[in-house]
Image (tube, rainbow, N blue to C red; front, side):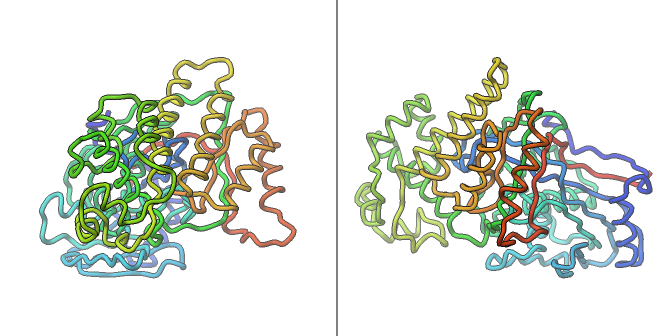
Length: 458
C-alpha cells in the first residue's frame, strides 16, 4: 500500500457543494476554471506525543477536516496564491525564486515549503506558474496539523502540475523534510498520516524506514476532539525546538554514560538500539545516568568533555543557542515511557479484551500526565479541559499535538456520546464570562478519515 501514489478521482463537481463553491470563487478570482483539486487531511494523534522526532512510533488518525486547493497551471512563471478566508491575504511570487522567510510563519510560507520540497527533489530550476485557491476547515493553531496539511497539499499540487509520480511514502518524507524550511524541527508524523491514512483505521507510524500499520480502534467507543481555544503556533515558539534539543542532549549524555560513541547520536531511540535493551530498561538507565535537577550549558559541556563554543555551534540549533537550562531527565523519561504506551495501546487494540476502552483510556490519561509534568507541554486551560472531559464520561483524555494550547482528545463510550458533548459544551465553552471566542470553539466526534488525493472534474 505504501508504494502506491495518492489516488486520483474523477468527480462531478456540481455534486460536491464545497468543490462547487471553490470552483465558483476560483472563477471570480482568476477568471478561469481550475484544472484539478487536491485535498490533504489534518490529523489527531491518539497517543505518542513528542516522540516522532526521537525516532519512536506514533498512533494518529486522519480527521475529516482538510485543506482543499483548486489549481490551474499557467504559462507564465508566476505563482498566485489566494485563500477563501479573508484573514489570509493573497500572495504572488516568481515560481523560479522561492524565498521562505523563517522569521514569519505566514500562511503562504507553508505552501512554499511543499512546493520547494518537490522542486528540489527533482532538481528543477524553473517551475511552471500556477493559480491556486486554498480552502481549509482545520482549526488553525489547534494541534490538528493545519500547517502540515497545507505543506502536504502544496507538495501534491506541485507534483500533479509537473505530471511526475511519487509514492505516498516518498511524498511524506519530502514534505516532512521541507516543512523544516520554516524552522520547525518536527519528526514526520503529521505529513506521514496525511498521505498514508485510510478510512476506518488509525495507523501505527514507524520511522526509518517510514511505514504505516493499521490499528483497528474499538467499535464501542468514539474519539472526541475538543479545542481549548488557546492558540499555539509551533514555528513561532521556541518551546518546541527547545524540547527537540533537550532530547538530543539527553541522548548524548545517556550514550556517553554507557560508553557509546556519543558524538554522532542525535535521537533517544538510537541509544536504545545501540544498547539493544527494552524501553523499560532504558527508563532504568535514565534514572542512573541523569539527575532530575536541570542542567546548565557548563555542566553539559563537562559531562561531554567539550567547550561551550562546540556545544553552541555543533550541537544546538541556532534558535536554542541562548537557552540556559535543560531538563534532560524529565524529557527522556517522558519519551521512553510514552514510546512504551504507544506499543501497549496497539497491543490492547489487537487483543481486544473486555475492558479494552478502559485500558486505552488509562494509557491516554498516563500520557497526559507525562506531557504535563515531565515534558511540560500542557497549559492550565488544557489541563482544565482534560479534567472536565474525564469527569463527564470520557474513559481517557489527553492533550494532542504539540500542546501549549490546542486540542484535547478523549475516548468516550459510544452510548455516552450525546450527553458527553452537551455537558462538555456547557462546562467548558459556556462560561459565565463569555471569554471564549465562538469561532474558535470546536467540539466534535471524529472517525478515521482517508489520506491526501487529487480530484479531476468528470
